Length: 213
Image (cartoon, rainbow, N blue to C red):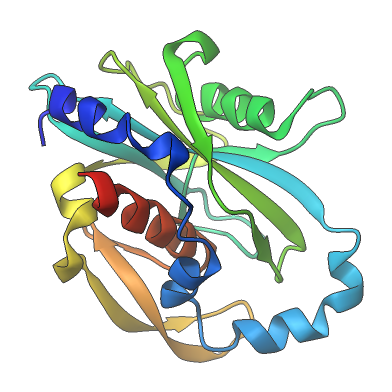
């Protein structure tokens, strides 16, 4: 989709009710409800993070969404696809600021280049005990990405047409943080498998954009 057409379309989303948890749960792993029940006490003190779903024009003015492939490390989100973003730090004045700061640190897009259109529905992640607050943003210029090499393995530039296409939603057996292989719903984007919390947040963004695009 041409980026100018995309911008005109999404100007309508500010006052549309969010699809919310019903949309997120379309992409929920089957064991999520059980994990949340087990985490009731831990949830009360969950850490907070802000992430950015950033849409932008490429050099041909096609609309794209940037995702990141995280480095392999000793942690529950090792080598997974996610949004740029991260933990709310003590000096961050807001979760939106945290999302913008981490986006700059991880992929090099500066604060002033991003317009945040709205906050999406927050999502609790049981394995890491984080509540993640996603923000939908745009940048009008083609970014000159600069990845943070110690945290980001690769940048994944997804065309809007692929993102919105239901044919790229399927299911796959995944080895989870529970050390069990489970059939989960996934997005297949640019040869990468996107599942779990990122897929759940993407699902809500996709359903919201489908209303206006």
